[in-house]
Length: 500
Ligand code: ADP
Ligand code: MG
Image (cartoon, rainbow, N blue to C red; front, side, top):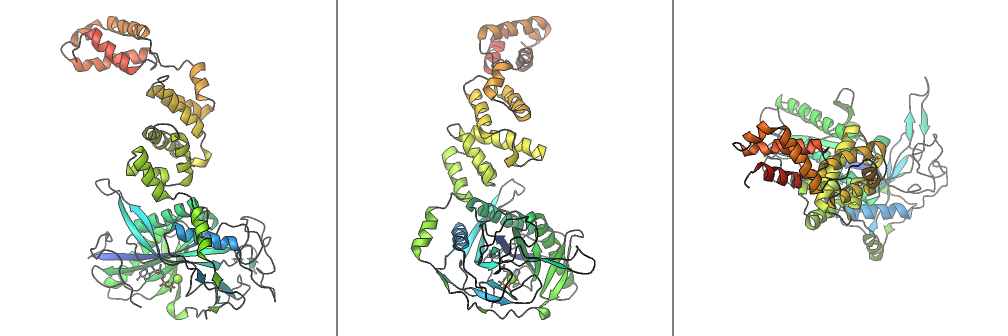
């Protein structure tokens, strides 16, 4: 099989530090655990964190005579995911047995899909950047396929000095294997791809995307080539379980391969492991030891077939996905592409933002959510789910600014009070006298006082009108920031006799 480079032939992302023009080629196989109550072919629970071997039915333990029964919810989730990846949905697919021996695989084979997967080719748009000019570039990455398969159990070698234990809680849990085309050209692109894929899965609610719980993990295929050459031999780095590690594994592996090739050597196709402690990959097995999986259709399962009406009903229930949401926020609220991408990057952030923006000025809401809320969360090391300021509270702050009750500056103080102490922003403004002074009489008095106390400066202003700003600052200070800044500015200029 010849692989066709689906990407632009111009070398775009080269490896810094290598001699000559090398390009790295990456394709990812992501295993995403399906969000479902029960396993792919049994009724056992999928709950994470239960005591070992709690979630095991006779099917999962491969007792003789047990028969698999397909879980329709897992099929729906796989189709929904396919739709979210703009992929071809195959109305007929086949479950095959992939045969190998391992202690945590009691059946002696994994039920997977080989030649006829449930979902065919699709695409994911990733955004990479910013470049030196601060621009982001959208790149389309091809999806080769998505298929359903069973997860294996877990061997535990660190519980006893001389024996290993097996936990079958995961055994039989549904996984979606999502295979990309070899379209990725840098570790940044690969990280952006996994991030975007996770975002889409979370919007769809088909996988929780929690990589630290093993709900999502990636096999990372890496090869390098001199610019203009054909694809080289790839190595596959198995089971990488964080986005950061995906990046580190690629960086290490690309450099390792280039060093070998520059030395006149050649790359062996092999399976490697990433060691996060050392930041390096090392060989696990070579192609010669590769399993012969002896795939064949599982005789216990009929081909999986559904009609278009089934797919249509799932299309009807799809949520708005991040790319569409981003386009809508830009078109309807006039947000910049940059701001919109931040707001849609996580479903929880998008939900928060939309609650704040509902019935309010979108740009103002975007500024507050991005700069103030996300800024404060970031500083506190908190996730959006743990925000101390609810969308209702932030919305109330925005309303107070909009109606002129508080100034933008006081609003920042108010936000901090709500963040630290909670409470109703309207009440806080009342109780603590944070209302903006719009009464011109009061502002005038404050302006007069500042001018009288600084007669020398009031003289100098006539020669240097830009000094008026200093007076405005003094008046704001004297009124504890509560005076309406426009009114102060106008009055200061009038009283100092500065022409507009
Ligand atoms: P296999 O089934 O043996 O793992 P596939 O053809 O399904 O092989 O490819 C697996 C992954 O390897 C895919 O994500 C694909 O994009 C990627 N891939 C294929 N060729 C290359 C290459 N030369 N360099 C990097 N990745 C590659
Ligand atoms: Mg593979």
